[in-house]
Image (cartoon, rainbow, N blue to C red):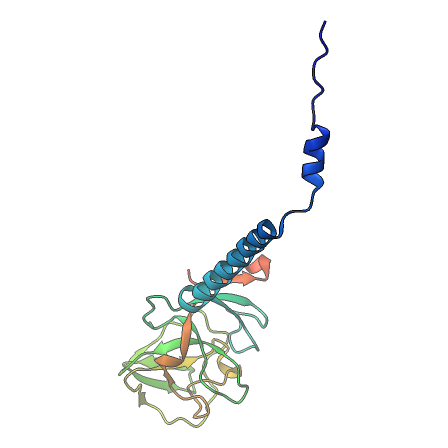
Length: 198
C-alpha cells in the first residue's frame, strides 16, 4: 500500500512562514494600522463634538438628583433648551469648571421667588418641584422678579440652599451659547445607571 503524504507544511513552506516579511509588505501592514487608528480617532472626535460627551458632577449643588462624582452623558444634537432640563454649561465662573444645573425658565419668561415660603414662580405660576432637596430659601443679590433676556436661561441647582446659580450675579442668567448640552443618562456609578428623567 502506497504511503500517504504527511499532513503539515513541507520544509519549503515552513521556511517561507519563518522568513522575514519584505519591507514593502511590512510598510503596507503598518499603513493599514495607522489608517485604522486615524479613522477611529476621527470618529471619536466627531462623536464627542456633535453627538455626545461625558461630564462629571462636581460638588453638591444638584443633590439629591445627582451626587458629587456622578458621570453623565450629555448631548447637544438637535437640542432646544426646555424648562426642567438638566444641562451642563461652560459659562466662566469662580471655580472655572462646567456647571451642572436645571433650567427653571427660558427666554422672556418671568421668574419670582418667595424666599420665605421657598416657592419659585415662573410667569406667575408656582413650580411643582418634586426634585428639589430643600425649598428655595437662600437669597443672593439678584433682585426679583426678573425677565430672562432673549437667548438666555435662568438655572438653579436642585440643592437650593447649597447652590450658586442664577440667583447670584456671579452666575446670572446663562447665554444659550454656553450650553454644552442636556444631561440624559447617568453612567457612573454603575449602581445608579439610568435616565435622569421619569
